[in-house]
Image 1: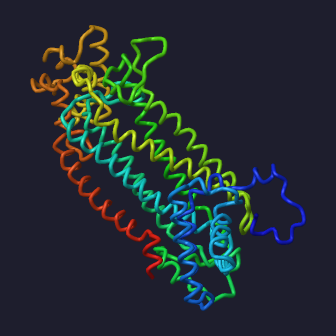
Image 2 (image 1 turned 90 degrees about the vertical axis):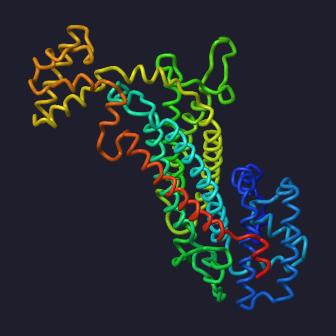
Image 3 (image 1 turned 135 degrees about the vertical axis):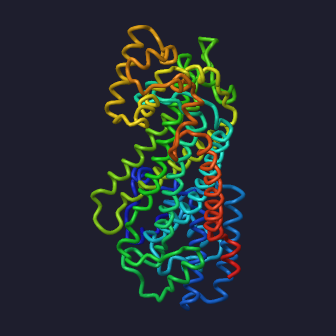
Length: 477
C-alpha cells in the first residue's frame, strides 16, 4: 500500500502501478535506506522525538530486517518502492512504533540520500578497478618499453614509437578518468537528509550530526535544490561515459590489431569466440562488446540530461528515471573494467611484425627534416627538401636507407655520413629529446612517477572507504 493513499477513495489502476512503481530496480538501495533510517532515528532521538527505549526497539527491528533481507533478497516485493517496503516491514515487525521512522523526512530527501550513499560506495569500487587497470597498463608499458612499432596519424604510418609508449597513452586517459571521478565524488558527498519534501522541517534536526553519522563531508544548504538536484548523477554518468569512450577507443585498436592486415596481436582464446560456420575464425568479441556498450552508456547520459533540462523546482517524478540509467552504467563499467583487467596480461604481441613495419624508412622523414633544422636550415625549407627526397625515392623505387651519400648531397650539402646511420627504429626513438616522447629513457622515469601517483590515489580512496557507514558502526553510537 502506498504511503500517501490516506485520502484516496479508488485503488490505483494496475497498469499505472506497473508503470510508476520502482521497487523492481530501486530495491538495490535497501542497505542504504536502512542505514539512512538508522541515522535519521538517532537524529530524532537527539531532538527528543524518539525516546531511548523506543530507539532500542527500533534498532532491534532494523537488525532483524537487515538479516532477513541479507539471507533472502527475494523477500523484497509487494511495495511501491524500497522506502515503502522498509517502513511497512518494520511496522509489521514492531508495531505502530515503526510509523515514527518517517517523522521529519520525505521520500524526496530520503531517495536522494539513498542514491548518494549508494554512489559513494560504487565510486570507490570503480576507483579500485580503474587503479588496477592502470597498473596493468603500466606493467605492459614497462614490459614493452623498448619494443618498436609504427605510430599512426589518420591511420597511416607516421613515425616510429614503442608499444610501451602506446600503453602509456591509454594510461593517461584513464588517469584523467580517475581524477574526474575523484572530483565528482566531492559533489556526491553532500547530505540532503533533513530537507524534507522541499522546505525542511519544524523539528530541530541536527543535520551536521546526521552527516557525521553517515560519513558525509558537507550538508546541503538549500532544501529546494537538495531534493531536486541530480547534477551528481549526470556528472557521474559523464565520468562513466568518458571512461567507456576510452575503453572503446582501446577496443577499436585491439580489433584492428587482430586483423590479418595489421597482425600485431594474437587474441587469447579465453576472451575470444569462433564462428558457427567458419572454423578458422577467432573473433575479438570482448573488444566489440565494449565498443557496443559504449554507445549505450553515452545514450544513458544524453537521455538523463534530456530528462532534466526542463524540470521546475523542486521534486518531480521525472527524477525517478535517474536510477535505471546510472545503475546500468555502473554495472556495465564494472564488468568492462574487470574483463579488461583479465584480458590484458594474456595478449600476445607479434613484435617481429611490428618491428618490420617500423623499419619503413619513410617513417624517419621527420627525423631527416629535423637533422637539417639542427644544422641551421629553417624547418619549412627542410620539410620541402625532404619532400623532394621522398619524391625521388618513390620515382626510383628506393627507400631512404638505400640512398648513397652522393645522392643525399644532391639535395643538400649539409648531409654527412651520419645520415646513413639514422634509419633504424631504435635510433629514431632514442634520438628523441622531449619529455613525453617514446624515448625509453624518458618513459622509464615517467612510469616510476605513475606508480607513485597510483599509490597516493589508493590511499585517497581508502580514506573515502573508511567514511562509508556500516550498520554496526551506526547502531553502536
